[in-house]
Amino acid sequence: MKLTLNIKDLKIRLRAKSALRRDAISDKRADEAASSIVKNFFTQWSPGLDQVVAGFWPIKSEINVRPLMESLYRSGIDIALPEIVAARKPLLFRKWMPGAKMTGGAYNTSIVTQDAAIIEPNWFLVPLLAFDSDRYRLGYGGGFYDLTLRQFAKRKEIFAVGVAYDMQEVQTVPKEKSDFQLDAILTEKRVILREG
Image (tube, rainbow, N blue to C red; front, side, top):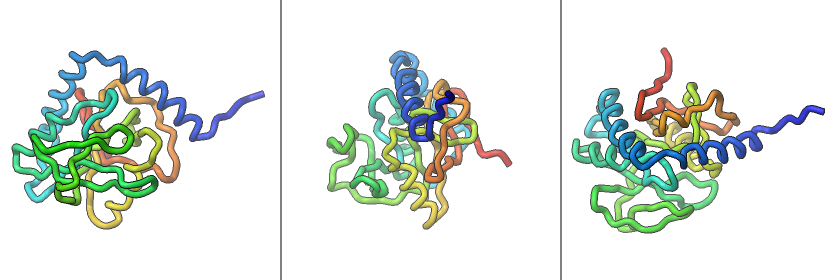
């Protein structure tokens, strides 16, 4: 008898496996990767001063994008951090700058305090557990980024970049209709772009 798993079960298994692999990254390698993604980002892109870039405050063993956020801020670009408002609702984004007051948010996230201005990003740096060469990502399962990116893309042109360690790549991320395809993947080793 052959056992076939549905997509949700495949995602659950891949999440667990990917989290364990990411958790095994040494502090030294994590620090080196944080520096390398800054270089790789600016080698590939130079967002205009009219752009707003949404970063993320890393949780668990996510790649550290804070040096990249600081570099973007120093270049004159407004930076935003996400805030979970409620289940099945798009993320809210508040203005961030180095030294901004932070507080605890849902799911052990760190968010900018409520007195920070709400702003709308054009660029999104997106955390993930796994990615594939087609630029699909596997997140934690809440669907916050998929919903948020889809809603923003209906209103305006956006650019969504998954940020990860190169070793987080898998052959294929199990996909559902609700999964948002990213524009690019940024790792410490390379940038994966849409072909054509």
